[in-house]
Amino acid sequence: MIERLAVADLAIPASWPSTPNPYGDACHCATRRIALDLGLITHGQVRDFDRGQFALLSAYAYPYATPERLNLCNDWHSWLFFFDDQADEQIQIGKQPTLLRRYMEACLDLLRGGSARPNPTPLERYTLDIRNRMCRLMSASWMQRFADDVEDYLYKGTLEAARNWTDDRVPDLASYLVQRRYDSAVYTCQDLIELTGPALELGSVLGDPALQTLRDCCADVVGLSNDIFSYQKEVVVHRNPNNLLQVLMVNHRIDLDEAIHSGVALINAKVGQFIASEQDILSRYGHGNAALQAYLHGLKAWMRGNVLWSYQTGRYGLVDEQLPPRCGGYLPYSLLPANKVSALGLTFASGHGRNPIGADMSATRP
Image 1 (cartoon, rainbow, N blue to C red):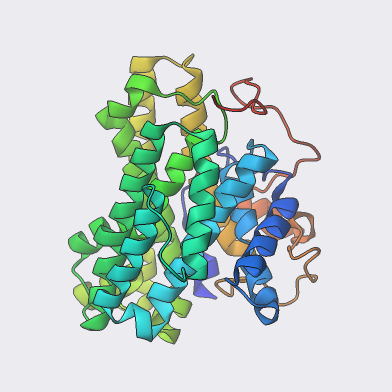
Image 2 (cartoon, rainbow, N blue to C red; image 1 turned 120 degrees about the vertical axis):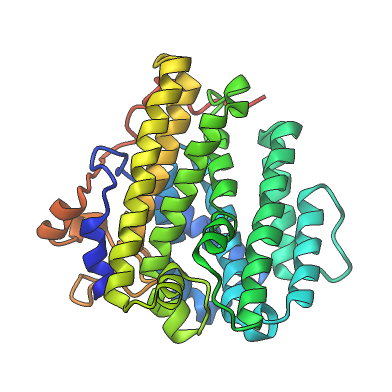
C-alpha cells in the first residue's frame, strides 16, 4: 500500500524512543475489561477492539510509566478513540454538530468536576472514572490545564471537523493545519507525559514559548502522519473531508501520489523545526534539567511511537496479512519480518529499562 511507502520517507530520527513499555499487554487487558464493564464495547466487538491495539500506542508513548499510570494513559487514549469514532464515522452524530456539541458539553462538565447526568452514557461513565483517577494523582492546576486542552480538542478541533463533514467542505490548508492540531487531541496526550512520574515538575518551563513550539511540532507530526495512514479509512470509506491528503489534493489540484510526497515533506519540516527548537530550549535551561529532558523524551516517544504503532496496528489496515497471528490481542513486535524491523529501527526490551532521567518512577505524586 502507498501508505506503507511513506513510512520510509519520514525523517523521524531512528535514535528517538522506540522501545515499548513492557506493561502494555496487561494494560490492554485492563482497558478491555473496563470497556466491557461500562458497555463501551460488547463481547462481539472485542476482536475489533483488540485489533486497534491502543495499549501498544500507549506503551510506545509512555515507555517508563508504572502500570497504574500507563493504564490511566491508555484509558484516556481509548476514550479519545471511542469519541473520535463516533464523531468521524457515525453519521447520526458526526454530521449533527448541535447534537455533538451537547455530547461534548456533558463530557467536559464531568472532567471539570461536574456530576453525572441522569442515565449517563457509557462514555460519560468512563469520563467520570478517568477524572477521579487523575485527581488522585495530579494537582488541581494540572487538571485545569488538561481540561482546557480537552475543551480545545472538542470545540476547536472535533466540532470544526464535524461542520466540514456536515457541509461536505474541504478546508484550505492553513485552516486545516490549525484544526488538525486540536482535533488530533495530541495536546491532551502530551499533558499525560507529566502524569507518568513524579519527577516531571516543569515549573517555569511551561510558560516558555519554545516549549509551545515543541508541543505544536509534535502535534503536527503525529496528526499529519496519522492522516497518511488513515486516508483509506477516513476518506475512501467514510467520505470524511478532514484529512491532509484530501486537503492537498483538492486545494492544490494534485493526485494522491503527489499529495503523499507533499504531506511527507511537510511532516519532515516539522521534525526539523522540533529539533531546532529542542536545541534552543536546552541551551537556555541546561541539559541537566531532568524534568525538561524527560518531557522532551516523551514528545519524541509520541512522534516515533505513533508511526510504529500505526504500522503494526490493525486499525488502519497497514498490517501485512502474512504476519503471524496476534498473541494475547497483540501482534508481537518480535514477529515482524527482519527487513521491516530494520527499516523501522525497532528495538525490543526484556525488562522495564532505566528511566533516562534516573528518577524513581514508581513513587506516587503527592
